[in-house]
Image (cartoon, rainbow, N blue to C red; front, side):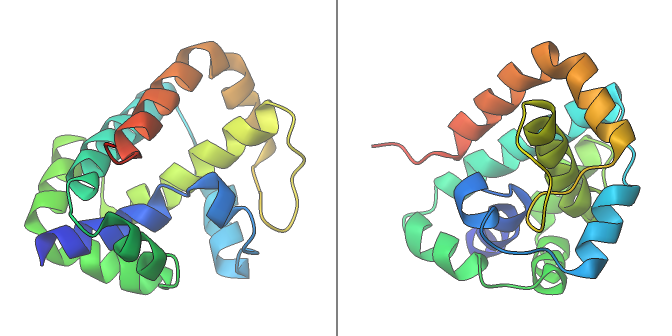
Length: 157
């Protein structure tokens, strides 16, 4: 049960680029992402939590099936599952994050990095000018960390 919860929450929060990039964001999601202010300490907290949560999720034997299911969940469903999972909440607490901060912060960070690297903003990618400026200024430090966290998300072959 715990693995299911962590998996579902993480799949969306991780904002897997290929799957998430094709789904237009709701107005509420855009507003939350645009209003999220990134800082270097906060970005590091998000990345550290993302890597830890990803490791838990990938350990599940039915990783692919759970991933497909989680991509269809609403943000409220993902949040409810995350809050109900004591392991996920412990990871967030260790990184001084709430479920809301994580579920908004990870996509905000990813999208700011995407725009900073040249992907145009649009219906599926939004980033505030301040977050894009932050991402550009810290790209060399953040890109390797987020790439390493993404590596933790890939199931072992």
